[in-house]
Image (cartoon, rainbow, N blue to C red; front, side, top):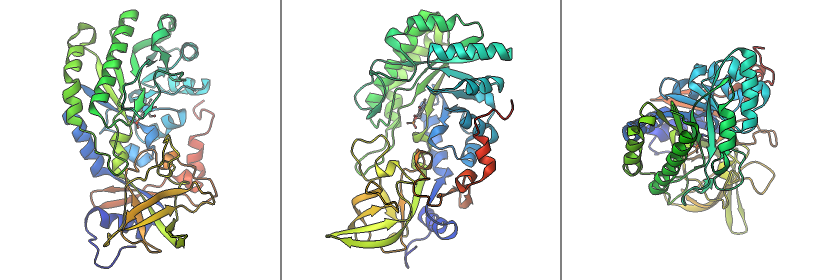
Length: 429
Ligand SMILES: Cc1ncc(COP(=O)(O)O)c(C=O)c1O
């Protein structure tokens, strides 16, 4: 609830209005912030790259609809995501399909629906795709996913250089590459690497892209491939915690520009479209999670605010999504306030791991106050165990300019129609 005398103009005023009119817990996505981020990406990296949105980070259908036409391409990782994207207006040919556990029916439906590229993660998967393409009378475009042997220091979250379910281990890939290339119903249009994320260090990001370039060059040589596409899993990170500074995109461009120019000047890659595939960097900072303090408790010298949404709505903020050590997300009290006081924030679940903040400094919170958790636009709702303890699902709201729109996904509210969209069977079969 807003405080008397608080500045209710601007973003904070809109967040307060969402909390009052639509309610809490809720996610808010601010499209102006995404627009700005896209403009920065295009200004700094646009000379080399097209951009692909990895929708796993936020598959809200209205957000997807908004992104269609603004972002060049889409990465989906299940047939459910593919169906969602199409029903949100994305053309199938703009989508690529990654994921290490694709099932036959997913591959079949994607091929039958004229998916852009299947990102093949193994020879086994390639064989299935080849069979499905044969059955459908099609030749399917594929990207081969490579798993590099190394990732530079600076990627907290990475999957390279150790046993990995993703893609072909680059150092031992030659037999599988040749076998994939021999499959008659698949056309290799390029290569794909996504080996780490959440780096805030331009040098590490550039070193990582140099590793990609090396892998791309050697693989193209081996296959004698002139690729149409090379996908770089971006690795671009966002500042989640106090003390993190935002990534310097200009430094990334400066650090890697010459290598990308070299690549583009090589006759083999002159016609190649380079694609930066990213999720959090595009939408993460444009999202807020609003939760209301239901009760305040003083316990053994610690002030605790129990909120109406916690780990069930926002798993990453509770520290259980790929973090070794839980650190507080940045947050503020909606409506502002004077002074600061230490408080722990927990969610409504009957488990001690349902924690949103430990010893965070915020203006004094009282029952009914609303807290806005920052950097919540990616891996928020979609990555959270919303059914645990059967609380109502959070709302989702898009703010475009000064307009707010309830864009809550129906199936979180028990809607049968959306549930059907994700049914196992191919509805077109
Ligand atoms: C294949 C692939 N591409 C892109 C992404 C997006 O990553 P991020 O949101 O960290 O940019 C992911 C995330 O897991 C991924 O698996």
